[in-house]
Amino acid sequence: MKENILEIVVGAIVIILALSFVVFTVSSTGIQIKGKYINAEFGHIGGLKVGDDVVIAGIKVGEVSSNKLDRQSFLAIVELNLEEGISIPDDSIAKISSASLLGGQYVEIIPGASDIMLKDEETIYNTRDPVSITDLLGQAVFSATN
Figure (cartoon, rainbow, N blue to C red):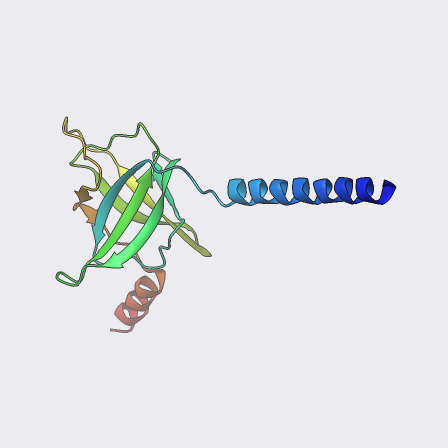
């Protein structure tokens, strides 16, 4: 009888540890409840990837939830998952910026002045593509030699 109680206690401890591991994993990966999804159209997204931050005025308000190619216009469609309660004016600008010289990018939203707000699944068309440091260096080197 003592062996059965010991097995039950050990089994309960293993289950508790497994559940705590699952809770920790979900909370640390940044999985969030669906908020508001809007899209942004870019000519080029550089190294932007799923999970990168979306910021307004330097404060994180969401994350990139998908990147896909529009097969008609050949533009990159970036889906942004914003926190509940965030309303974006329809004349806002979306810009891909670098977090540092070593890499890492984020989408910065510069709110416009319109009274009309984007609804779920609507698109920001006024966008700015990322600036490539290697392209800038190449232009500087080749313009200096001419």
